[in-house]
Length: 254
Image 1 (cartoon, helix red, strand yellow):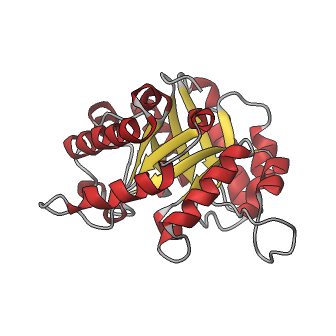
Image 2: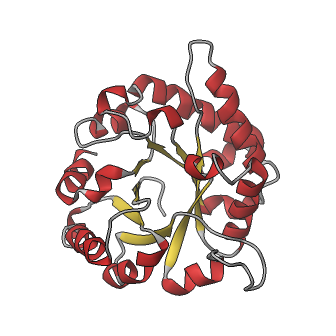
């Protein structure tokens, strides 16, 4: 992906409620994909809808299939899990790793790193999610984000960096009213902070290879301000990506 291209990631989580609804949403998006301009869109539906969404995406050069998580254990005896080979067979190109809703109940920083590394090694593009639980005036949130990034990126092979995306999604901003979303100037500061960390860990030449996304209560009403002033390359969208008309309007704004 070219660095001047904008990247939007739609995380459907456990939505919608039926395969028919999933197909309807995806068809609505696909029908307007020729108007995306310099935007590339990754859609991450629940596992059970991957195959149907993949059929609709087809060979589009604007739409890509993503998975919300991945299992990296060897062999097939892992009840309830979905591994990299299965995801690739159905057409998955991107995978979310380290989303806060996974970190909260299951995935330690070590597990996140292992998932990221193995996915990258096997040819998937990884969207590494980072973000603090709370923000305060003392700046403690920087320490939490710093630890997540250091743990994930330390000793990352240089040949894998080009397929890495970092999505900053603070937990306190997820699912909130748009009035409580992050302020663009706050996002600008944390984006610079993340880029400095990438430079310190991987080298200054690698910073430009890693796209930075923001997620957390982004709507069609605040997307333009967040994108233009936040020093980012794209957005990670949750519930708003399920409302086709609103979602398409949101993408027009950036």
